[in-house]
Image 1 (cartoon, rainbow, N blue to C red):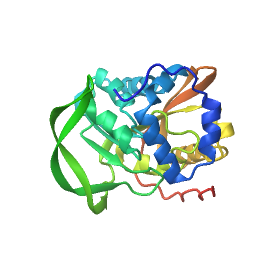
Image 2 (cartoon, rainbow, N blue to C red):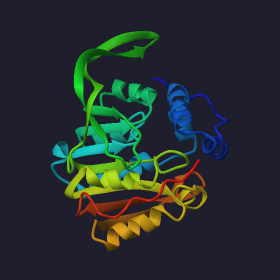
Image 3 (cartoon, helix red, strand yellow):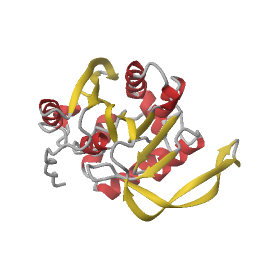
Image 4 (tube, rainbow, N blue to C red):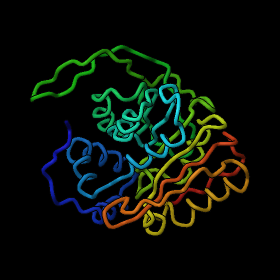
Length: 269
């Protein structure tokens, strides 16, 4: 496994301050290095409950026929939320994340049918049409061993993922400092068919201390509700979503896949 479980000095507050200074390319490189090193160990160290909490909320909504529910995991990372959904019987999952190294860890786990290397920011997610077979290998006891043949998605003709392609989109940790912006809610909605759900978690403190979310995230949600884009299914407070900080898991039914609401203006770095 790519992560070192022995580190015991991860400082989340300091990590936030570092992230604030990075541009997009630098942030993606940080994610790549994090995936190769201590990402999952760090998440365990701070007691992060988002992956399990979001997966449970999705399972609470889809109580039957889970094996046929098509899910898009936004900010999929190493596949932690996908693993939790698998435990509940979900099988048809795609992931999207800007980090290639995160993808490598997830692919070793054989969770997702497709994994898109993309930054979700409100622009339409592309679907890649050039495909090649390749052999996936994973490191096991200091050796690389083949685990099967996979389809590698190659950038060629980039077409948007069709509206309403999924039953559900989730984000189990991406709404944080310099990760997934508020406008991603538009694309998370567009790719879900009416009657499906958007489900995500967020730390209470992030709504205050993260510039991209403060005064933007919750007002956009309320606008989606008031203008009939979403219908609220559930908001659940999660005590200690991360050690020392509460948060919430929110689930909304999609009524309109492509809202006419204008996207929020981007913030300058």
